[in-house]
Each structure stands twice: as C-alpha cells, then as structure tokens.
Amino acid sequence: MGTVTIIDVARKAGVAPATVSHALNGKRPVNDATRRRIFQVIRELGYVPNHTASRLRSGKSGIIGCYASDITESFANLIVRGAECALSGNGSSLLFASGVELGTNIDRALEFFRAYNVDGILVCNHLTENALEAQRLVTANIPLVAVNSTIDGVTSIVPDNYAGGMQAAEHLVASGCHHPALIKGPAQREAVTMRSRGFLDRLKELGVAIPEALILEGDYSFQSGMQATQEILSSHPETDGIFCANDYVAAGAITAAQQMGRAVPDNLLVLGFDNREFSAFWPIPISTFKPPLEQMGQLGMQLLLGQIQNPDRPPRGEVTKMPAALIIRKSTCRPIV
Image (cartoon, rainbow, N blue to C red; front, top):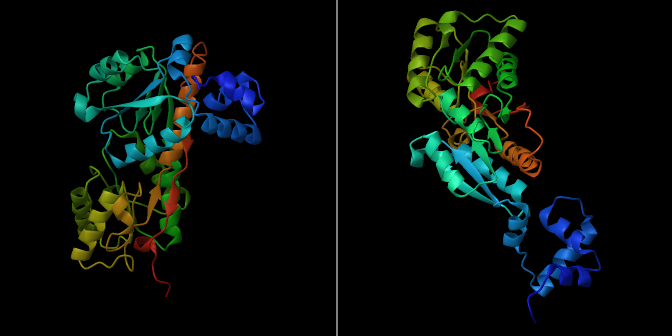
C-alpha cells in the first residue's frame, strides 16, 4: 500500500477531509464520537500527519520556546507539565532554554529562540529582577505569555498572592493566634509584597494588632527563617503564630522554635507558602498554600496559542490571578483544650 493520506482517512471514517484536519489540530470542535472514529481509522491505516507540509503552508515552525531562570526547578516543572497538557494534539513542540545555561542573559535567550524560528515564548516562573531585560522580550515582536511572573504589557498568569495572604491571616486567627508575626521574603519580589499586604490588611480588618518589630525581612531560606524566629521569640515571647514567606522559611521557624523550647503547634503556630515537596514530610508537617502551577501553565499555553493563531489581534497584557489552596497540616493544628 502506498502512503496513506488524509483523504484515505476521511473516506474510511465517512467524514470530510477538513473534519479529520480539525480533529488533529484542535482548531475547531469535533464531537467525541466522530473524533474517536477518526483516530481509530488513523491507527488502523497507520496514517502519519505531515506536519512539515502544514507548517510550510501556515508559515509556522510548530516550535514554542519555553524559558525559565532554572528549567529544572520544581515550580517550572509543574508549569511545563500544564503547558504540555494544553499542547496535547496540537502538533507543536516545546524548546527549552534556561537562565542557568544562558547566564540569565535575555538577549542570548532571544537569539537562541530566533534561531529556531519559534512561534511564541512561554516564560515559566520568575524571570529576572531587571524590568528592562524583561521588556526586551516584549519588544521582540514574538507572541509571549508569562506564568508565575508579571511583565508590563504582557499577558500574565500568577497566583492570587494577596488573597492568599488574607486567607493566611484568617486561618491563624481562627486557629487561636492572638499575637502574630510575619517573616517576609526578598523585598523586590511582587509575590512577597502581595502576600504580606494581604496578611496585614486582613489582620487589621479582624482587629488583630501586629507591631512593626514583628514584621521581619527574609530571603526565602531556611536560615533566614531560623534567624528571624529567634529574634521574634527573644524580643516578643508572647508571639503565638508566624506567617512565613515560603515553606523553607517556615521549616527554619519550626526548627528555631523547637530549639528555644517552644512547642509547635501547641503554643506557636507556623504557616508557610508554596507547598514545597518536603513540607508534608517535615518532622512537624507544615501548613501551607499550594499555587495552581499546572493549571497556570495550561492556561498560559492556551492563551499563547491564541496569540499565535490570531497574530493580527494585539495582546491586551491582562493579568489573570488564580487562587492558591490552603493545605492544613500539623503546624497550625493546635490541640483543643
């Protein structure tokens, strides 16, 4: 038998060739029964879509760039998993570039992606501290979506960190916290600012005071969590709850509290953020928030594909915020007396 064509598939499936094409590329809806019949015929006939010819006709490479400051980092991995789900059946492939590999040099990343004529770029996770570098991506005239970070003028998907901070305040207060403290992360990170603002705003609404001395800076590290907690408990021993910038800080806070003879959660509640892998298995499992990273990656890719398929429609640069889920574990489960 000669080369199987899309016409052969359409004839045996009893549909128009355009219907087979829509089932393969997902550009138009095809009902489930028809889709299943088409793919059954494709398997029976051994049909292999000629993506190369299709791309030549469309002027698209079928390659989508995926950039992160560290592509091996767990957050980036989860975002990519969601992006891959959105690409399923699309016929496009991801091309990865890491800031580690390229020395966080945006110009080198753009040169790399341009060499492969990518159709668009998905920025995964935190990009850069330098807003001017981020703007180079904006002016590159390539469809672009940012996930878990915001770039001015670019469609972005981020966790709703402000709402997460508000929920953190509500959870600690509802769990019996009367004298809270806050250990923040790097001041230049937008996520830190929004989580802290939400936490402090909600505490004020709830009528719970927090002295300036109990709002400490940190750097997202275990060590900074330890140091800040030692300072907090030494100067304000009445403190009975700490909201930490992330789970590494929370792990440090728990360790320091135990070293100082404070029982967690009996007389000190500790709440983290980000649901890092270790948080469920820490000696005292850490209550935390789980960002919807896979869902963010999936939505980000869907929006990027929309830009690629509609190049004449300028992106509006809107920011979509998705809620993080509170996961309650032992570190904030105070025994009822």
